[in-house]
Image 1 (cartoon, rainbow, N blue to C red):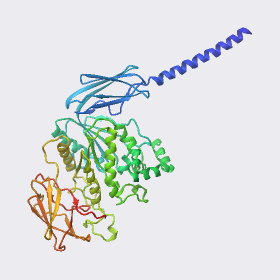
Image 2 (image 1 turned 90 degrees about the horizontal axis):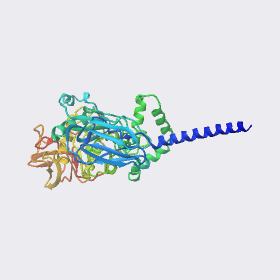
Image 3 (image 1 turned 90 degrees about the vertical axis):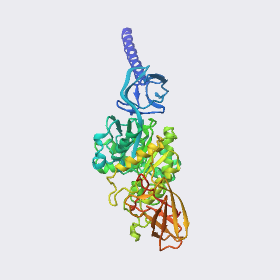
Image 4 (image 1 turned 120 degrees about the vertical axis):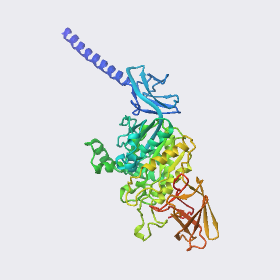
Length: 518
């Protein structure tokens, strides 16, 4: 009997030992996760020149992480959550491939990243016109055989309810399949004497609110309303979850449904890029937010956003918030102005499309120009481009070329002319208005005809086309229908007919001198 009891006790003891051993093994596995590095750190990547280079990832808590790169070595210790980050010293531009070796004291695994170049990295984001492919832009397609030293990382299109730490995509030793991003990279590489890396993260139909982190609800009132409604909308969240967990690829209806939401694109497609060192961000977006003037329409649901008039202030807050995320006040933002398009919201009220009072894209362009109220920003002028009937015009080459010129002047500080004429001041002289311009050693028209696109108004808000005459760096405006004109608007219609340029054929920026509300 005693032997039987001893045998049972032995069995119980053995089981306890096995459980303890299993538990210890589990603890060991959890305490020693495999060394990981951020999603963007892959073979063929381009790192940003002339600024500290953050490299980050995960490992065992307390492990010593060491990085060897460019004849230098730096180390750090993973924190209690297993997260680590090392800021490598700034590097000069280099076309010579380099290798990075990352090791952890608690893991035999080594991460070796090869074929790394040092150059200028730009994030290109927005909606369908940033996504617009090269094959649909004939002028851009012609540049493909001539391209060199351009690499790209295209972020997989998806959404997430919470900010993600990783994303899907890979560095390619070729240009991005975006007509605007590629043409921008092509002309920038030609002038910068450095490799160019493009991180393409865009999705058609997306609003600016889709790319906002949720904490912007504290500073953008209409976004707070949108997110409160989203958080309370169980039907929408359930559908999003079902799409994400369902079969791939998504059908068009589900694809549009996902990309039309707020915040969740930022969580999945932008947040994981932070704080990858880059020179700046090219932002071609706004079409989605032109569906109303004042915003927050109840119907259709996808028109519930800033509208055109709130967009400018939201854009400025968005820029400031992204700079805070990257901890870089000099992060440059290149905003692509919406080009010409003939849609007018109040056409049913009998107002002419050509009238500058019409609720056209002119108001969105004015909002986009508000970005210039912040430092380290540029706006690519597209007022002479576009298509009156096609929201996706194929004249993308000038956009990329002008964007690269702006970078040359405003970021690389080269002596180039990157801006078209910008209204400086307006003076009244007898029965005319005289407009003076900056960025114009010489004013001219691209077709040799008299300047077009100017309108004059009296104090009652009655607008009439103006006759314009070039006199040096000034434009003299006159209308025989107004004795004492007070205000002028230029290129302030959906698809204006404009021809005013400077000595390097860059178009004049649109403007208005009145303060009327539409």
